[in-house]
Image (cartoon, rainbow, N blue to C red; front, side, top):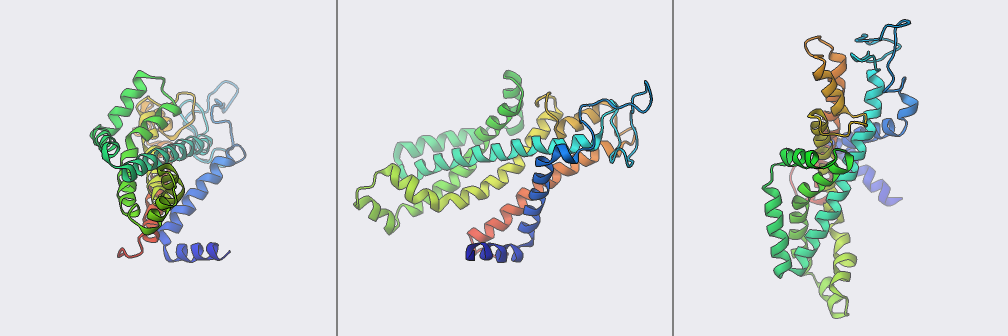
Length: 286
């Protein structure tokens, strides 16, 4: 109870982090209750008459954000697109944290040739162009959520690994680590039982940043035609709007909402990471 009160006091002192968490919670509610919140089936072609497709209808009480050129409800697509965004973002962030933390722990504690190999591989990965690499992988394999998540994890883990490694280099010289060695603990036990919990909050900080990167990557790949064609996503909504010249038709209600949702989720990741940074490193200035 005291821990929860301490976290709440900290959040109240960090309005940016509180806003970021609030944005995440809002989109989480939309994703969980998408079927109940959406007013129509996002894939259903609607008709305004007996044989007339409800194309380009303006926002109304029936269609909160109007309809697309294909007669589909934009609001329902927007709500269901939240699921795709959070699925990709959270899954990719989890993979980045696990892979980056594992590599950082091994490199920092074991050192020697293990450290050199991991750091050289991270140098190569950091030199790869982010979006073009993901597009090439998607083109050579089957486009979809799994491919995007794996690609993002493979490209973002070096940032987490380097930070975790630097922290482990300091922790392994502490007295409690030396005491664990003296008592006969194996290196793997020291790494995963004694050191890993100490660097977990730092890994979570980089995970919150990876959420935004993953969501932005999914939207970019879907817009360029390399996303999952069977999914309802904000990137596909923007691609559909662009292909049907929504901008020239001044159909702002079609392409502005998904764009704002992408910006909001990416911004939420930054705000949460900014607040977490102050919590992890209280000596940092504002």
